[in-house]
Length: 140
Image: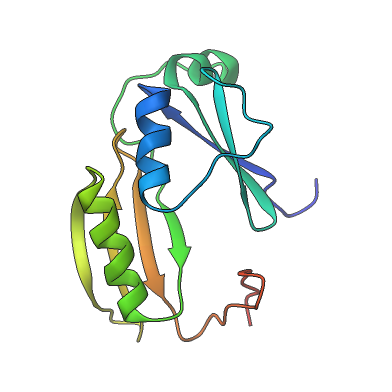
């Protein structure tokens, strides 16, 4: 198996509500999305998707006990102002801000929002991980 991730799918309670939330923070579904069933987003070199939490659990062969699934997603940006702006947009769209933007012990700046279905997103600037023009990050 190649060392890469092709697709990240989040299980959501209400697809339309989740699409509206992600639209409010600047994400637009890809035209190949299936209305009322699944939303796809081109996210750099991978695909991000929103799908029914029940359907995702069934398809993945797991029992969904609810709660946090042990995964935090991250979105790296170029400046602390970008971190704060994204956190503000997420909060205005209904997200819970778990950690406001602040300097980190590793020399960056980050904050965390929790989306409408309980998925945590860290928004960060990491001076040790430069962002290429296409938005990708390669570990130095």
